Image (cartoon, rainbow, N blue to C red; front, side, top):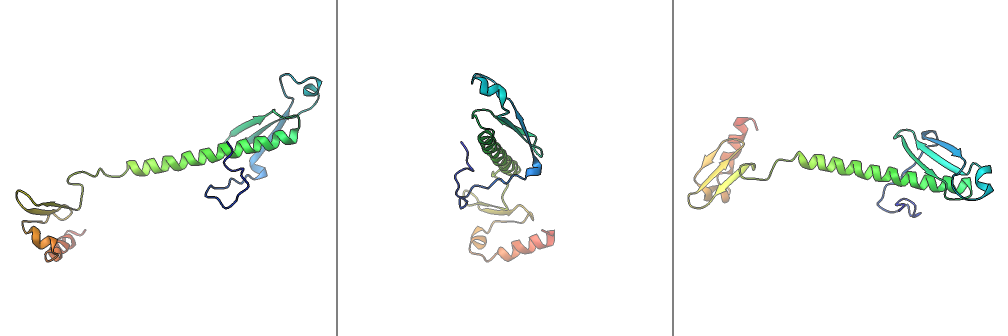
Length: 151
């Protein structure tokens, strides 16, 4: 799978640009069966992305140019996957830093039954006049309590 090799630049996937000075390209003789041609040419390619120390190699084709093109596709795919994993880790870190959505973790708690009470957890303001808070007439008192607490 080569997510960046569809030729469409207008997709939502990021484009991996590789600078030539960030790559080290090594050529070597292919191994395995293939006759005398394998032993006479350096058709296998190993590409190292120096900033990330990611290495890919290809010796599938007979031509060094084809192997280099294929290895570049593999390298771009690996770098794209690493980029996605990095974004996913940042999202997980951000999500894990969120406070649990449980009782008492909100700004204000409303208890309507069996007894009535509104408590602002930031300022410590407590009132039994729930209707006054819900219709907005007591919101200025809550805001003033927050102001005096320096919140």
